[in-house]
Length: 186
Image (cartoon, rainbow, N blue to C red; front, side, top):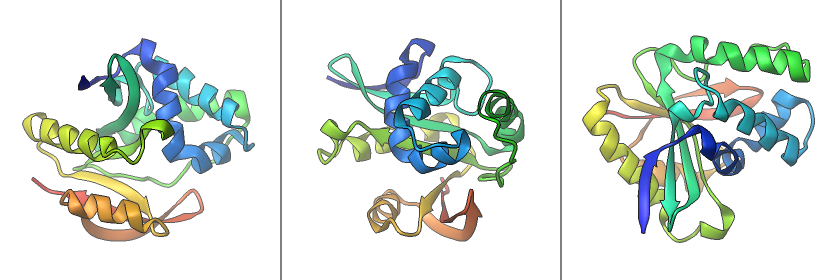
C-alpha cells in the first residue's frame, strides 16, 4: 500500500537517504568533502530536529508497505532566513562552513526544496505519484504558489515539472550552480 504522510523525527535516516539523492553536490559544498556517509549524517541530524530548514516538520514521506521510499522537503519561502539560521550555525560549528548561500526562495512562495525516491524504487512512477499527491494536498492547505529550482542541465526534471503544471520564472545562481526557478500557481 502506498501512502503520503508528514515526516516524523524517527524517519530522519530514511528521509536523509531520499533527500541526499537530490542534494548531494550542495551538501558536499556545505560539509567541505565529497563523503556520502557524512552528508547523510549531516542531513539526518538536522531532519531529526525541529525548527530548521531540513526539519522533519517540513517533510512529507512516501511509504510503500510501511517503508519510507521517497521524501519531499518544502516550506514557506518567507521563513527561509529563520529556518536556515540553525543550519548555518550547525555548519559553522561542525564543518567550519562560513558562507551564507544565496536565497533560493522568497516571500510569497511555498518552496519545494528537494525530493527524492530511493534508487531501487525509481523508474516506476512513484516520484510523479508522490509529487502529484503532495501538490493536491498543498491545494487544500496552501494558498501560495509552489516554487522550486531545477538544474538547467536536467531536461528530464524540467519535463516532469512542466507536465505537473510548473512554469519557468527565471534563472539564478545558487551555490555556484546555474538553476532555473519554476512555479506552480493554483
